[in-house]
View 1 (tube, rainbow, N blue to C red):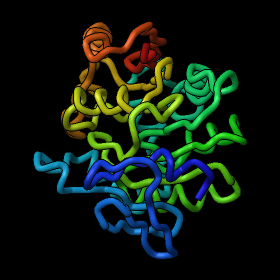
View 2 (view 1 turned 180 degrees about the vertical axis):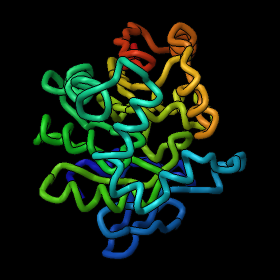
View 3 (view 1 turned 180 degrees about the horizontal axis):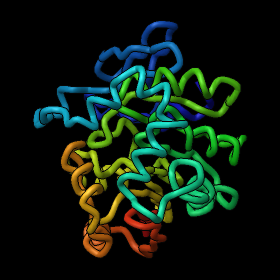
Length: 271
């Protein structure tokens, strides 16, 4: 594992922090409670289902993210197509569905000006994880997703990046200690979360003071196609003003956003 990875962890079972972990080829164990987690081929499985007694039935979109086929075609076909349907005329070109998305996320995080580690939350097949790792080759970048299929593809694609660690975990119960991350990237994911308030609380908790949270999602649409796609996929759309207000109530400051049709990138800071 990359240096500093264990120091950032919090046991999702007992909450112990401080890097008291035992790592072997096929297991990762918390020395505090004795709980063992699977050390998979290319990622560590720290998902603790017991911590989420309120798990709901998976939506159509969440089920698709567990598909091996979708994971393989996610970056080149699935994601760009989905973003264009949901975002409308503002998203016609560029990586991920609209112009310069990866560039905007990396620069909004200000990675060149600060030390890591950096968290790519709901990383999917690792598109942003790889971009972040290339931007900060001497800093730890941790990609987190709940989908085994996505992480298996991501693990193959991050080979050669010595500063990346991949973790299977739930955005509602992040297995990281308080104030350990310099920034959190969260691209096109919050619309799929069961409880955005809890996920935002977790993101704020793991950020250091001054840490930056950058995300992207879809705004409410007048397009019948966009609204129908959201209903079928089982995802929510956001009013940017309401999202800003929610983040402010949780304790984020300095909210900014850039809109692309019915999608937008937002940035906020933990004071």
